[in-house]
Image (cartoon, rainbow, N blue to C red; front, side):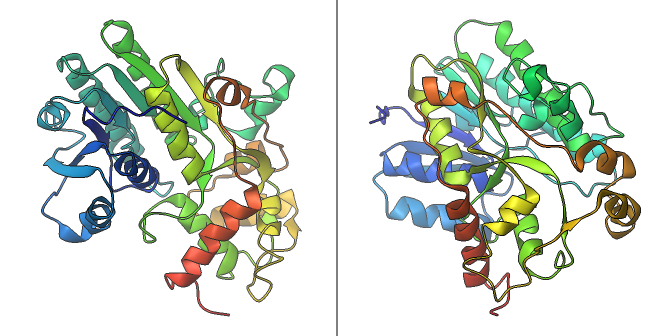
Length: 353
């Protein structure tokens, strides 16, 4: 059983987000006081689900106003906190200005939060939500990795503002975090690098590319078939558990790949078929030449370079460090996918068959 210190408050950035929602839930269940900095604390619709969680938990939650791009705005929320979970960072693929929409909020936001930690005497540990995207940019990079397996020792060197800018934003933000951490010795940095996050949200209407992908598997958008893209997947509930272990296990250190399964888009679709046969779930794998031809026309965020470097490549990462040091146990892929799909049905984001 994880020993969680509930005598000191902790701060969770991006508390209204998909991943952070489950972190907040676990902390509240453990009796912790959670400080939640948000852009608009007066927006009842954005925080109601977290208030409901707190009302039914031994812990409590306090909201503060803060903004990723406003230096010093996290100081009040962080005051007195022993642990900082920095989860806030945009996850969207459809952007017009990647520097402004992805890179600046990721890097400058990380700098803002961690520099505030440097000025807050109570902070002892910072847990940063990075991504496997900071380890690799395209599946072709996995092919070139030692033993064709991603590990925590590898850094993404193939992404840029022009090519897979989301992955580039996660890479520069994590590098910034390690540079700031190295300049001081009071608090320790532990970084969580998840693969694709799936599973139900605390808020069923959370905005995340993961929800968009799962919807497309069930709404007919992909009924003709899916490209053979390898990917890693992890349940959002397991990911939240990893964050708590990274925060409260004294021996946790460095980066951790948090990924339950080396899988693929077709394999993930297949996990839905036994239960949801009435839905237009894709059963075919589209040939790479067809994806290369059509995908950029159907979705401008999918370039032909992306297709060339990702379709037809397997994805494999070593999650052994998380199992050894954080004692992680991962849910079956089918359970995560089906729980998420069912939530989309229950919340009417997918039609009843």
